[in-house]
Length: 466
Image 1 (tube, rainbow, N blue to C red):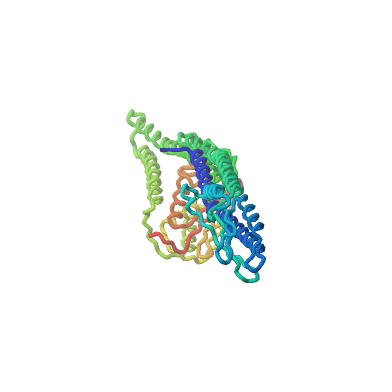
Image 2: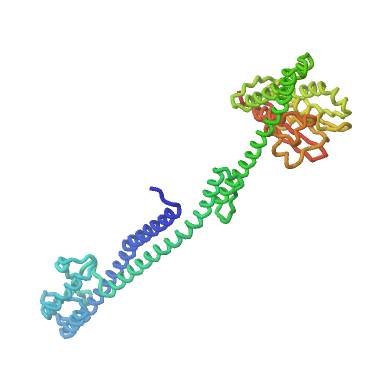
């Protein structure tokens, strides 16, 4: 059976309140009422001692008693519900409440038995007169029996106090239930409302409405984190959707040009407009090579992004490798009148030499391509806290800020026209990032339009991947 969060929270508050009130009643009746009864019994003991002292004072000496005073004391206590029997040292009865008024004594016994906690019809049979010795000048002169003595006896005032106390507890219980219901409703609404908004937004996102966002109107940390996570997810999906659409268009654009060229050339030769000579066939072959290179780059990227990429690791000096690769570009830098600066530090790493070479070649070629004549390109290789840092910096055209977060995406190019004079297929940096990630390293970019770009590659001197 499925219940809403609001229902479950409200029920949990009510159940908690019921349990607390129940425990309070139990503990109160076990401890408070128990101590109250002990207090009542102590008062009874003090009253009995008072009776003993009063009766002992009626002894005149030489076996003589003030019988009128004894009878008066007995009658006064009988009126107050206390049954006494007084005898002298020889056992002779001086005054007995039952002989004086047996009917009243029976009513008192029955009434007190009914007032005893847990009283039943058999309580009257528990009548037990407690004997006390009477002393005069340290000599025992008689005895008084005081009764009835019921250990759980409560008089009318005591019973009224207990009933009022239990009534207060009952009122507190009812109030607690009402308060718990109101508090549970308020708290459940505060918790469930933002969660309902998250559910609604997540449903919209799942249907493709990636521009859906959740407005935060709560101070609960977990819900704030939840809404932020969903908003970030929506933003990421929106960006990925835009990239996916752009990727589709870019792939189509990359394939359309060579295929259109091939189609027009082949149709012209089939129709006899062009002669199928070596020059025409060479042109067709160049377009086929271009398509093959694009497909090869995609296959290479798929392989590099595979977690099971096999690395042929060796120890080599990455500074020396960078120097040798730059020598291959030296003539091209000179041809564009670009000043090349290289700072080398011996930096031995344990990695795949060929794959690191591919990353460096891609960074060097990009720096060459996007730096105007008379510009500058600097390459720095150094060791830093157990890692090797490779920095490739130029003062070329730079990359617009809105394009920086996406330059490592497949086929992404800052040049929206995708002019081949300003760039390749847009997959080189994606491959470079995949290689660096496979080596447990990082590659970052900083760029300012018209001021230049800086790529920073950090590689561990050794890594754990097999």
